Image (tube, rainbow over all chains, first blue to last red; front, side):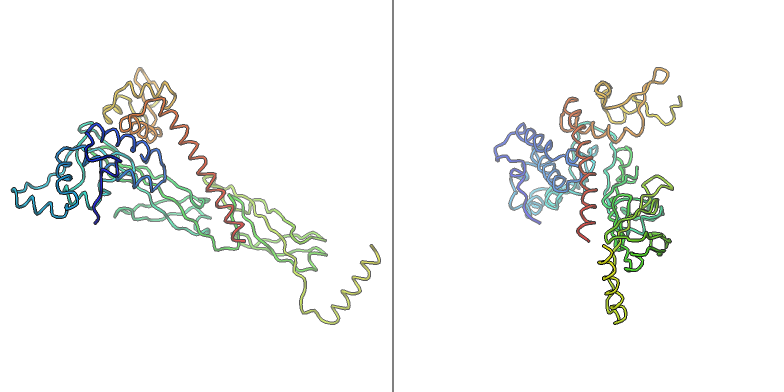
Length: 301
Length: 98
């Protein structure tokens, strides 16, 4: 647990007035408020620090204690114990959360150690406030998100049964209303935000709703055409190969891609790129025939 | 119009301990939609999340309505850009992984 220089955090000197503290707090809060820095964990941490610093420096009693024991805060309790009979800590009522991602539990060990708990004080009395929002990450595979399915998550000790719609994208965030932190003074619960991390170890590459894959084609089918069987994400399909198909040719299998998010029954397309394989380890007879083919080809062109 | 799924503005103001004039100003700036049913004013529950953000910006950071309007536009733009970035990252990943 390190000493925290609250003056430094608010960019103030020790002689700063309460008005200076408020001014500095407002300036920095505008810069780092989580509402103005969505999904920015650094800003969230910084905002937490300036809140804590403001909580101490704008309260004359706390500031006095902090100034008195500051660097030696570890001994503050011992000094106080020796000096007076301690009253049990009473958690202040009516505190309002300052931001959706901000939790009283996020105050530093240093703060807890010096001031015994979460900060108090309220600007608007017993206002009802919505609980904090929670953020969670859910790891899924590409196969998982191919179909709409249900999953049970444990968030803050509570089990939540979730329906994960097919077609969810890597990095996408969905909101589950009312499953965040409990409201303050009877306010509504916060929301739960789940960000999906979708890993793909299949041979299919996903681009939005479309899938891409390579299909190996022997030279004979490429030249003469024919029917082949190819893998799609949900099974095998038969595919007609046109004669004289070139290496790198792309074909589109309409509706064989990935499900479109929240559009049941709609699918993207599957794009297959042919990779033509030149035969290896050919026999003498094959070689002769290739030579003959080559001669005919040159003669006719 | 059924009002069972709507939130009365009066109740909202008392719940968040805010002045009606604040909601009215947000409405004037087109930041909140207020629906009138039989002389009573309501807002749609879908707007609550945004409204709470605007309440925080105004009461905690002392940002005026013009500022909230500008911030709302910029945050929408940030959202769009983040979505675009996510899609591009996923696309880039496709090329990087061959």
